[in-house]
Length: 209
Image (tube, rainbow, N blue to C red; front, side, top):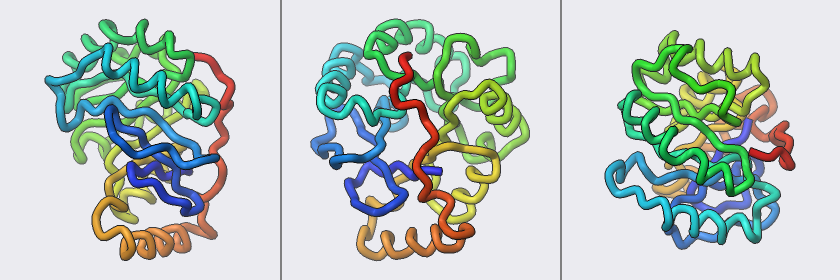
């Protein structure tokens, strides 16, 4: 499993999560994903700005982009589904796998399985760690989809995501006290049975959305 951070680093096992309009460049030879920035600014998403930003990043680092996250609405299943139908076609035109975000209350029938390339597990902590979310992750794995878990900032959460079959996760852990937390994260990896999070992602990097 790969850990994606918004802080550029050369740590083994850590990739990069690009945020719209962020100044940080993607480190060379690094697996990365394109977030949508909606978690903190759910009502300020601008499609044209997002697409232009994504195209600039993909122009130089597209072959290592794991997925692009379709806009969602935090903790709102209906709002997230509406945004998926509104924005999916434009984002698919970027030519990279597109991730659908799950939110509190979604059931198996709510996920547009035939239309997505990756499942991004969002929502509240209670939702992410519940049986319903676990069932969606299991179904995604059964279908051969990439599974990503958002907001993983502790060893307990990292282990939980790994145990449910996640291919990647992300968090802000390295953003705060980066020197100290890099060492703590290395210890997480050491505790996870010879660092399984440090394995290269088994993604088909050439897969088209």
